[in-house]
Image 1 (cartoon, helix red, strand yellow):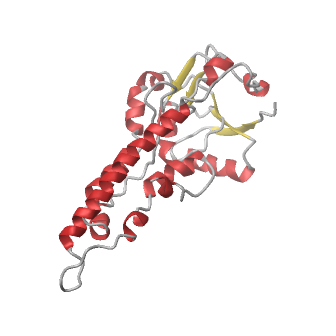
Image 2 (cartoon, one colour):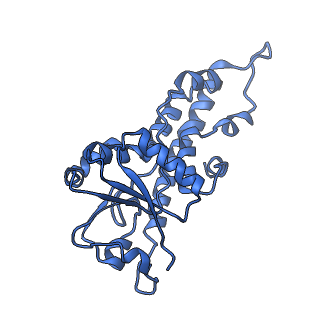
Image 3 (cartoon, one colour):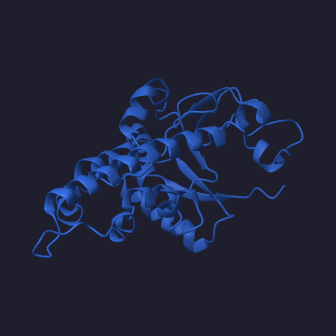
Amino acid sequence: MMRILSTVEGEEWKDVENSLGILDFSECFDYIDYDRDSDGDIDFYKQVRVNEDIASNIVLLTIKVSNYFSDWINTIKIDNTITLKKDFKSLLKVEEDLFLTFNYTETLEKLYQVKNTCHIHGKLGEDLLFGHGNINDYYEDDMINYIGAENSLQKIRESLRKNTIGAIERNRNFFDNIDDSIDKIFSFGFSFSEVDLIYIKTICEKISNPNVRWYLNDFDSEKQREEYQNLIIKIGYIGTFGTYSVKK
């Protein structure tokens, strides 16, 4: 399983999550020398059993990957030795602002003392949500290529799919506080992964104020910011855009 994950392309977290939806399982099966019958043909029934056993083992490894991820997150420590971003802190109204964070740690709460935070994908010590947003059905392809493994491979893809609808429902109180009184939105360190755009869409549906302004961090290139703007507009945003800096 780790070998499959090592084929992930890209350096950002969104690349890892997106790749979970297009895992290539061929290496797990291509090396198998299936038993053959007296005519020299692959024994179909034995092939089914072998593929089923392989896929079942991958299911178990998938569960371990999720556990390893949670264990890794739980090793992260937030303490006072971490340097605050003064430019970032100057933007905050810690008692009033709403914070939708994709960070699994309590950096905002512990370092910046913010109050109204929604950890949409969970946080340290809780069940963590991560995964892909690919809803394509590979069942028939798996049946053709890896006969006998199709049910287990489907289970793997489903277990690695991020339940974004469920995340919104669990945090409905947070989203219900978003309304036309909001006139500024700042995104910081957010990669606008396709699987997470549903959250942006939900925010845009809550705000019908054309005077709202969305600020993108100038850490990203102008081209990248333009791509982000196009994504935000495409899913229903009707306001304007600006930029901000966090240098220190």
